[in-house]
Amino acid sequence: MKNRFSIGEMARLHNTTIKTLRYYDEIGLLKPIQIDINNGYRYYSTEQFEQLNTIHYLKELGFSLKEISGHLQHRDINGFLALLEKQKVITEIKIKELERIRRRFQNRINDIKLAGRIKQLGVVTIKDMKERRIVRLNETIRSEPELEISLRQLENMSNMSSSIFIGGVGFTVSISNIINTKFDEYNSIFILVEDDIQSSLVTTLQEGKYACIYYNGNHNDSPEHYRTLLNWIYHNGFQIIGDSVERTIIDHYISGSKDDYLTEIQIPIEC
Image 1 (cartoon, helix red, strand yellow):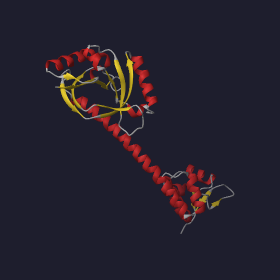
Image 2 (image 1 turned 120 degrees about the horizontal axis):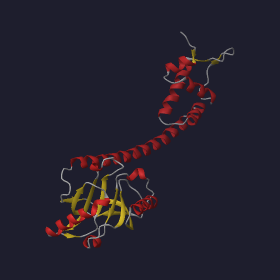
Image 3 (image 1 turned 180 degrees about the vertical axis):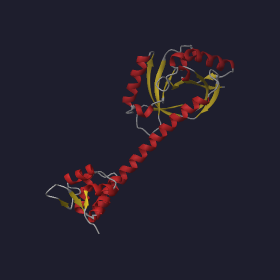
Image 4 (image 1 turned 90 degrees about the horizontal axis):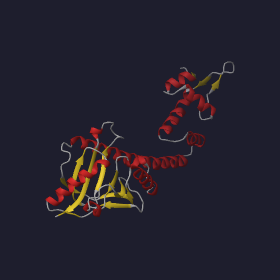
């Protein structure tokens, strides 16, 4: 039976590339059993098949070529177990991070699907809201530039990257400003917390009943909808008990059509 294989045959048999095998030769990870002195052709034997299989297996597990080389040189079972334990821990960390990313995707998907199900805009409803964890920066915000600067400050102070909170940013209007019909000034900016983070800025949005309204637009369009909410609350005999929560769910970063824009305002109330 043939027991000498060219580099091309070796590559095809093991579903790899000639370039990869040449590189393994250069770094001493898998050297050919023979090199033709006349033409420089590399040849491999069946005895090296298992070595290449081991390299592929360990690469699939996430080991570096340096770690693989060290194992193949020493072939120590305790050392190999240590490598596996180390890689297992790394893999578990990656799984947790991927699960956090999955939750963020799902939350954004839920938001956008919810937007598609909303048929009545500008209509006040009552929602029973659970307590929500947020990181919050108490700061007066009156303009778009101040908004962006405050968001960057909150991001840096809470050690959160923008990839974590896309779609999860909101603002609050103080209860005193709501009562005094001053709707063009926010008293804080917040980010919904979807992961366990450690920050002195972590707080909560209170649990309870909220008078809520969805509208087609962004934060600049909010004053008229605050007035609608305020009139409804007073007309129905409710009392405002806290700062409002305002969050744009779909904006120009998600859709190029203003007809798709969606913002929700929530005001905590009690009888």
